Image 1 (cartoon, one colour):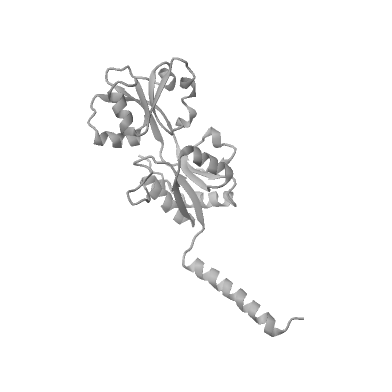
Image 2 (tube, rainbow, N blue to C red):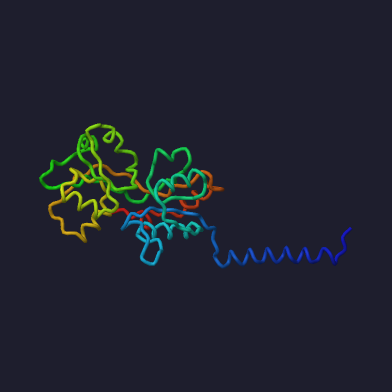
Length: 244
């Protein structure tokens, strides 16, 4: 049987651990989730100081704190994000709702941020389009690294369709102005920002489609369903949705 002089240090050490844990709770330390975003200015991007920035980031960080969590963000290419979510190297992605390629490996909460709009940008002399299928057989300009939620697949399969890629939104707009494509497939928010820096009155657009944005959680994250419930409980349409 152990003597009191041997048991007492063990008891004291245990009490110190409990006290430290209680102190951490009082100080507001929160579980840290590993999150990722893509460079999608002005909504999500890395600032000049190397920090995640943009209204989506601000709203998500505020929501996470209200849910009892902190998020450690990384800017990653979209294919890396998909891979890391499947493998559990990421806990969540601030991105698109209902990505078919992620349906088996992720879970989504019951809320969404505002929708993003995909537009077909073109010169005034080019015929407007009403749907994605209207783009078949045309010369398209796409942004390198974007998946477009695979919604362009029917267009890309048409052998008459030609595709060029641009590394930035500004470069894509310049390509369109120079006649190096019939339509630029791009998103409203980053193009609006790019057009503020460029004088291109000859460019207009046709609305194509929209889809929602949300927090996409990896199924491999421990207690992920509990975490999602915490976020859903903290969610407020007025405070977090960014709808307009």
